[in-house]
Image 1 (tube, protein in one colour):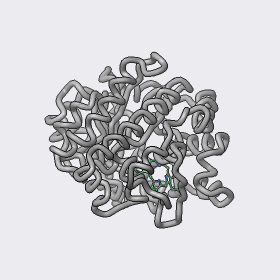
Image 2 (cartoon, rainbow, N blue to C red; image 1 turned 90 degrees about the horizontal axis):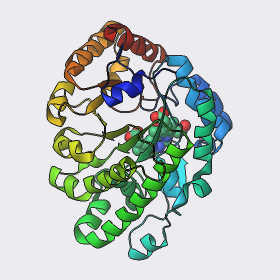
Image 3 (cartoon, rainbow, N blue to C red; image 1 turned 60 degrees about the horizontal axis):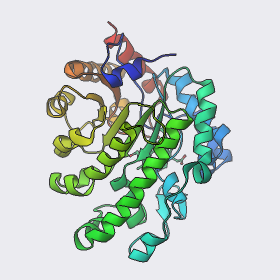
Length: 345
Ligand code: CP3
């Protein structure tokens, strides 16, 4: 079992810097496209054998040091009682978003095995096949709330912020329900065999530092706090917290309680390390578009990030956000090799 990734999460000594990529399974791989021709995205997420196969594709193709469960952050939201569809180009859509008290009252806190048993089954299948650690995940409450309130992806998140500012009690009751759902969902993933967890707070970077502390951070802290105390399972596993456009929020983010902070590419990783402190590991932070550069320039940037991150307690190499569908696979393979070679001690 390759445990270099788990060691870096905990800040232990490692022989080289481990690497995995957000969205490492997906449309840039032709093996993925082949399966997607036969089934739609949600069916793929809900068919454990297929979801497990797709999770394994980048492990074989890239030689990364961790696997991430193939699923989507909106799966547990659908389980709360919201009808979900994915459209080409447009992405996820909730036709009936939550806007009023009745909408929130109607939502359930789902039993994860009963409503999302396919996710736990995928984890159990993967555990038998993997020789690298498996990362489970969930969306963080604020990011999930934006999809539920806006009904899909948004530009300025006005409807979510309007609920926050004009109807704070409504907002709090929604966030409480999501938080409880996430705690149960992640606890079930630990029980099924996940060895690390990542919380995706893709959109929290649209909040001011003050609003982030009031309207997003407390719920993340509650999740991590409960999971730390053993959750419903009792196992202590590393928790990674990724916030998109994190640069303005790092002082708040460091208080989340996470073991690892995901850093996007809009800030130098050494600056981020100075702000989150030396008792937390970091993950990141190559611009996903840098994979479209010539190889020698990719190598220069990989080397620069490795150097800048050398003062961290632990560093896990990753992109600053997900792999883009147009990315040339050979550059991704080359990048993983570069990280391993340049960081070998
Ligand atoms: O990282 C991985 O390889 C694991 C799988 C994974 C997916 N989505 C697969 C996916 C993970 C961890 C996610 C998380 C996710 N989903 C996030 C947070 C991370 C991020 O990217 O910011 C968000 C915001 C979503 C919601 C979502 N899912 C959107 C906005 C979209 C549409 C955009 C797009 O790229 O099409 C999806 C669809 C999606 N999720 C795809 C994949 C592989 C593409 C589906 C397809 O095959 O057509």
